[in-house]
Image (tube, rainbow, N blue to C red):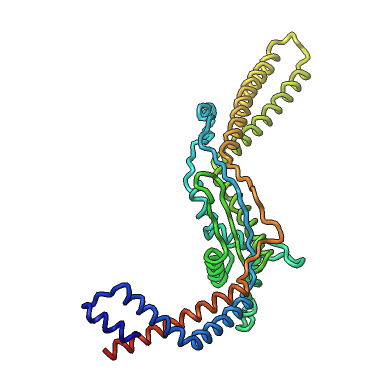
Length: 358
């Protein structure tokens, strides 16, 4: 059949008709069927390998957390900013989203700062309080490798970050890349909505849950502190000024009362001068105190308006979703790949022989 197809192809000056194409396909099919034992053997071997890999592949657990980010877009208290300017106080409220826009929050959650802060936070494991970094090292079997190399390294959660050694910094960097590349996934399911989805997939169910929840918690605290930093400074300054004025006002009130008790002779007008001066100072202090209190309340309202609202919608609940490469799937995929590889090898060898014989 192959010789007939070749002679017909030569007579037509290189043009292949539908009949000749069918003959060529039949020829190749016949060839592959003649090699069924070899192809089947490699397919069986591939199926065995695929099944073995499926059995040995670890079970992974995925923790899924969804939250909504609602940020203040404008500040309706801008018209009141002048009321506090006389005291040198900035009520704020004009800051833009900047780094913490809804799009940037995705990379912010994956940043090294947030991941390391999460890794260095404490967690309860088997009745002991350790850092999440040590927890990850244990489930990753890195501790066993270090013991074989007579190398010991821990990440105490109560040790300041700046006191870590160069080796600890290097290992933390490696852990960060492992988690962000293989385990952590931060997405927005719908760009039109403010929902943000955080997923962590690891071999340990508890770690996946704890890391996901703690990452969002740490990022939320840092986010809110940064967004309200300027407003909080204004509130603190106004609160300190109000406390100081309140103390002065109280002292002045007690001073006037004491002077009234001492000056019992109303015939001498000079005795009323001190009371009049003290009363005038008290009125001034009362006016200043009232203005400071008013600006303090406005500043608190401004800080509340600037404070973003991060509402968790769905939290990971045990047991988590399991992901494992199934045995049947492994056998099918392995057998298919084995047969495909063998077919490709046989076809290439046959084409090579044809080329060399022509």
